[in-house]
Image (cartoon, rainbow, N blue to C red; front, side, top):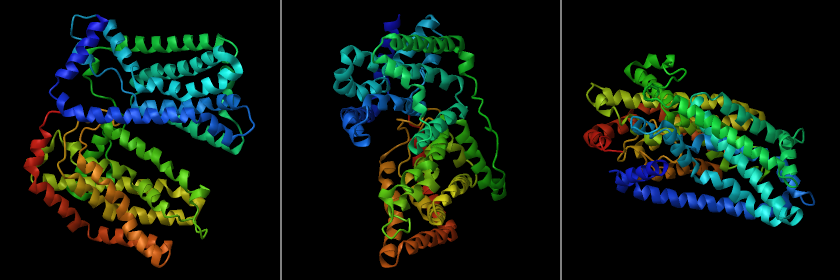
Length: 497
């Protein structure tokens, strides 16, 4: 029965009406996965050389063991966003006269067959062959790489349980993220190395099989925990229940002052909170607020005159203050593909929908600006940078991105995850990368070259303010485009996904 279920899932995928439509996307995704895995292999091959440059003369095996915990914390984070839950097919299988345990076993097995399951092996196997085997022998290399791999697979089973049980709770995710940031910062400053907590386990695995046996036990416990949870909660009535998401019915009070457009902005906010894909974009916007930490204090990006404003900082400022708008607006109308006809049937419905989205983008971008104020600790010029970039985002760039996103919008399922999900994505989403990168520099560079970098920043802010003053005619351009193509857009949204 187990292999029969695997065969049925394969036949379902190739007989689907969307198989031919998504074949090109699947081929491109497969190629992208191969490229990413090749980068992992390359990093593994160069790992010894990297450690030689970073810590010459030290024991590289002990050094690597002391930092493995950060790899596993990072793995927890990327698995949270990328790893899919094996419950998509439950609703179509539970009503059949098949044992529920067989179905759960098949779904869990299928979730394990993933590129994520071999990343740890590809990354550390070259180092084990080249370095560990020469010092501790073949058996030491085998037990060491096996302990790392089993730890990674334990995270896989734990993540399946964690995401299903705490689907809408970000507390655990933020705790892991905070531990990763604080631990890495503490190690960098020389205060305390969080990796010392797990270092003895991997050190001991070099000379003894007992840590490996312990890892096997822990992984089996994680699998049993995951398996029992799915078996005890796999019921059709549970799958049909609506998600209980905190703050799902909360409105943003200030939007109510803008009439129907404000009410639709509140409706769009509720849509974001209720659905997985849009919530992921909102969460990523919070994480990417830390993007400036990579650049602002990096000596490689220090300005020649010592002013602290490098030309690359313009992109960073645009990214920090407008990350949610830059992501969410790319699929401007696709978010409403399921109920677009409703807005067509209402007087001023389309106009209010679009203006409501504008209000939401401005509001979230303003919150991102406020959240970026602590960067002033690095220098007052970063506050000026973020303010000017914020005005350019909401005054100019927002209109450009929405203009490109209205070229042949596609339908999409909001309940699917955001990672490696290309529903709603077309050629326009790739083309709009150009204005996102080039438009700010088209304004900044001439003033920077003719006067100085502060003149370029002020030019960005002034152009953004002029765009805000001309908000009504600029937004009307995009509204007219939607109205002119509303029936074609409505027809495309009725296509099968």
